[in-house]
Image (tube, rainbow, N blue to C red):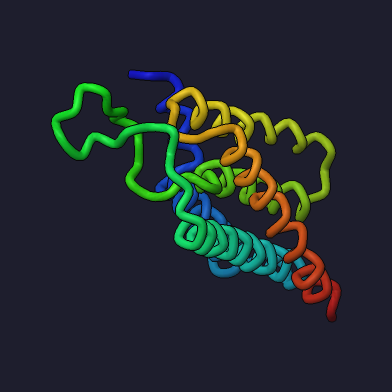
Length: 169
């Protein structure tokens, strides 16, 4: 199996849904099973809400841009029996890279919320997802940079709203 294809899966919708499920599972565990303290439970709930909103807003913004701009991909999808097609080429528009924006959004939300410098190493994963999209010839560097920018900006702009909620009471 192609290593670039395996890396690109970390930006795919199924992996991001898995992260959402994991986030909410941790909150529910702390709330109902571990019976964590009120402050810890509230912190977990705030992160789950923030993380969910960051990923959903990123996703909707990417869908809006893709449907508005209609930028063609640098690859040919395999819709007919063409020998020149790319089996990894999706049928939707190219800009911005949804895989790149999704995983950048997840990592950015996590690192902003937990504010630990050691978590910055996690940015290696979205960088590799972006490279994988380029190596699979399904995006241009412009698409990937746009996706990375969106994936960083959305959680960064959203965080102050959730931070004010966390500091209340």
